Image 1: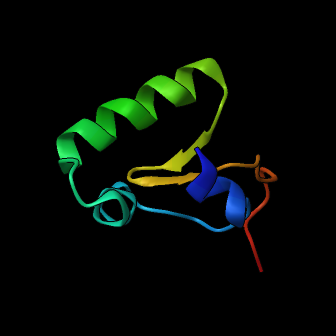
Image 2: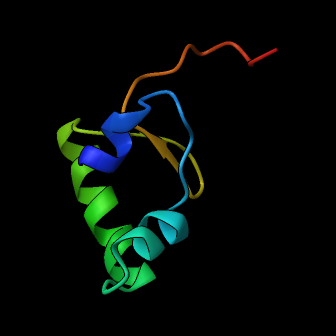
Length: 61
């Protein structure tokens, strides 16, 4: 997903990604992101948070 690859460490929310595309519903975006997370293309970091890169298991400072 090119939007996530622009800044791979930036945390993104499905609502923000959906609004970027304009013609996609939030529910559809959740399904697409979940599918991509299952295949390893993106990483879900928590409820409603995803990024294109993995994050360390330690809390961020």
